Length: 357
Image (tube, rainbow, N blue to C red; front, side, top):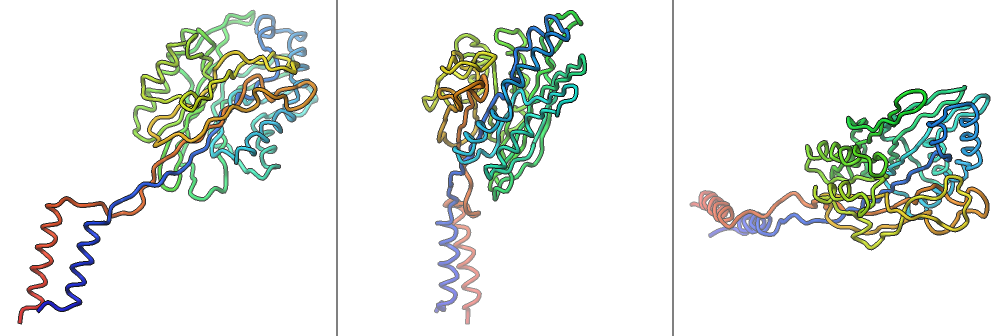
């Protein structure tokens, strides 16, 4: 007779084979995109770079008080629970004679830390740099990653400058904004994904759709879930080629899919309007390869954060979104019926050898 211990071994092994299926559990990935805004209209400087236009622009920057605006942005991020990744556009570094340096990304990091949210710079792309009359401006794309979140890891980052750039003629010669993007590789609970933050060329520029194409060409080398966020300077209808290019590549406009389609740009350059004047939808979170969409929320778009200039955190609204990854729980997959037959035959044969008198 077959002894009880041997029978138990067979039943246990067959149960593992038949019912050891892998199951999927969602992992939420909250992210944010925010154009921080220089705080001044740079066009007069580019058209006539003089001490008069430069000092006027700097005066506007000071009046638009980025530390106060950063505090408002940090509050919005905190109220949402603290996104894992934040894509920042116009994360400027500004210096002026006998004045402290304004490092927008670091100022925001400090404001977030004061609310109990610890972030580090996961990736930086450096764009144009202007220096004149003792003043300097460095334009940056920055991705912030939240620190201290169990299971969340940054595994690498890359900075890319677009090959396709617009040129603007100025009295000092041709000027290129040197736009680009930051690509961050991350992992959450062992599941890898990619995050891109970008600031595309101006609306209707011939380079804009080509720049989006460069991002897609890079991302098409991977089959991981991907998020692309940023200021695209493109309306779904007024700049259809850029938007359609993302959708045709398999990306979903998360905010539109969840019904959050309000305008995100642009407040007047002096931020001195108590009533919002946003009219264009330029800022997006696009996803490809995630299992589901959870939430989308515009922030800093309808209610001033204070009752004096600057009324608004930026000339752009921020966008916070959450999507889900699927994590595989369990390591044993269900075999085919043929495999079960082979396993059972092998085990019974072995059992006969063990119980043969």
